[in-house]
Length: 235
Image (cartoon, rainbow, N blue to C red):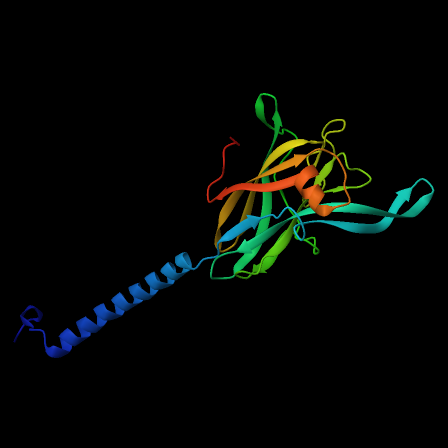
């Protein structure tokens, strides 16, 4: 009687072996293809800001304020700077958010960390949330960055998820006086690599009713550079 060790592979054995190997190879190729597609066609996020409408624009704000005599109506002109957040990839970006990470201001000896600032998310324009569920390719959305008002044009407000209380007399994490600032921002998504940007703001505290004049002369935003790695400090 022949032992199992004496078994000579038959054509059926070879076909089964080849089929098993082919199945494994096909599964590997499919997995590799899916991974490659996710890498090649993942969302690619970018921050932009134009020095004029629609990114930088004036609006007429109306509302009510609390006074010692009760509630009173108010109306004022406000100037807003907004990021245009774009998806340059070929797949939809999920759960997109923009966060301000660090803030520097320029002094005579160079750039100095703003010790009062701490990381905060920005709010998406017109909805007020910090996360947008989807950002489709080539269909950018606005995210509020900062604003100043005609009545208080000697300071600007960063449009963060909350407005923190003052940390010292007259010192606020998200409200700043005239000066030149650089801010590190990051735009993130659940299915994309974070993108980091250095944004500069030059602010002189002067008011103009013209949005282009404000954006090019008085509260001037510009995205200096972007990349996939955080920056240590401005040059």
